[in-house]
Image (cartoon, rainbow, N blue to C red):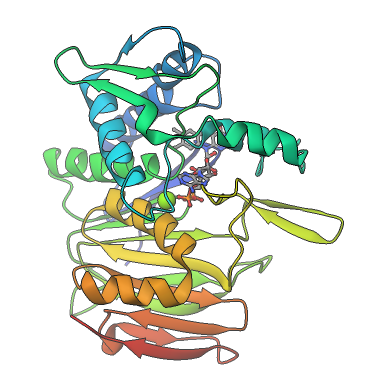
Length: 322
Ligand code: FAD
Ligand code: MG
C-alpha cells in the first residue's frame, strides 16, 4: 500500500498531507486554505490581520475575522490562567530574540526587562460584539506561534471530511493529525515516530500508536541558536523573558484537538516534568510523552500497549492516571 504525499513549505516549515488515493483537487483546496489562514495569522510578514492588531497597539481596536477573534480569545484565556507557561502576548519578546530566524541573538537584559512589560495578556481587550482586538500598550504584540498550527490542523481535518476524504495524515512541522483508521494495520492505528532530538537524519526513538488523534511536539532542538556555548531555544519563559530552562528536550501531547495539543505541548514544556505529572494526574483526558536531556522517556496517561521503544539508549517509564 502506498501513500500519495503532497507537500509545500508554509509557515516556515514543511507541511505535508498524505492520502491513500491520489486527489489533486483536495490537496489544492487544503494547501490553498492553509495559505489563506497563514496570511491572516502570521506575524512574520508586514501585513496580516494579527499584524494589523499589533501595529495598532496603544492606538485603537482593530476589527478581525470571527475565527481570528475566537482564536485570540481562546489563547488569551489560557494565557491568563494561573501559572500558565503559555502567553499569547509574548510577541515583543519573540521579535526581540528572533530565535529560529537567521539573525537570532541574545538581547541585552534591559531590553528583555523592557519587553517583559509589554507581555501582559490581561491588556488584550476583546470586544465580542464588534469582533475587535485592542492591545492597550504601545509595543505589545500578539504571537500565535504556539497555537495556530494546531488550529489549522483541526481546520484541515474538517475540510478533508467535508470532501469525503476520510483517511489522511496531516503534518504541519511537529503537529501531526490523523484522520480515520490507518489502512496499513489491522487494528486501524497509525504509527507516529518521534524523532531523536538534535539528530541530523530521521531517527525515531519511540513510536506512538494513535487513531483519530493528534500528536503535537514542542521541543528545543529545531529552533535554536548557540552563543558562547549556551543553547537558546524558542520557547520563552513568560516570567523571565529568557528561554525556559529545564530537564526536557521535548513534550508531545496526544489529544483529539490539535489546537489543544499545541497549547498544552508548550504549557507542559514550561511546567517541567514534575509539575506536568501532577497536572496530568488532574487532567486524565490529556496524554503526554516527555523526552528528557538524560534520555528518559516519560509517558503519562497513555496505555503502554500503544508505545514502542525503538532506540534502546532511552529508558521508558509509564504513569497512568486515566
Ligand atoms: P511551540 O512550542 O508550539 O511554539 C513556540 C512558538 O510560540 C515560538 O516560536 C514563539 O513564536 C511562540 N512562543 C514562545 N514562547 C511562548 C510561550 N511561552 N507562550 C506562547 N507562545 C510562545 N517560521 C518561519 O521561520 N518563517 C515564517 O514565515 C513563519 N510563518 C509562520 C506563520 C504562522 C501562521 C505560524 C503559526 C507559524 C509561522 N512560523 C514561521 C513558525 C513560528 O515562527 C514558530 O516557530 C512555530 O509556530 C513554532 O511552533 P512549534 O510547534 O515548534 O513550537
Ligand atoms: Mg504549541
